[in-house]
Image (tube, rainbow, N blue to C red):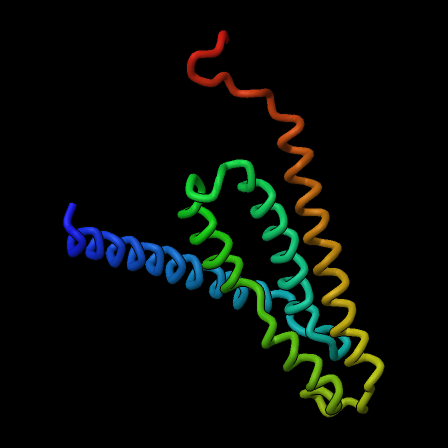
Length: 157
């Protein structure tokens, strides 16, 4: 295969990868919008964004650990679509940062300024996200242990 043909294939593969990420990102962003609209803010706290980021952290831990045994290339498209795309579009650091800043400045509802609430919200989101990721990893490991071994080619079934 010529160098030009090989370069053309690499460009096509990168374009396909970008398409997977874009498709997943659109789906994840829509899911975030719908879930945040359903949960929204409670008691002046952006609970929708908190729930989204914690759920996304759990799902990303589950996905990353669940696909780990598949090798680097075997699950590439799945990781790009679901991990980078869907969960990348679903979770949102920027909304966490803005939500924390709004709490620090008194919120959008003009509630009293509460620096402790702002810092607590940010730290709680990070801590709960870390815990959720860890639980996602443990869940994937437990699911893998509970799965019967698959017969491989050449082995007695």
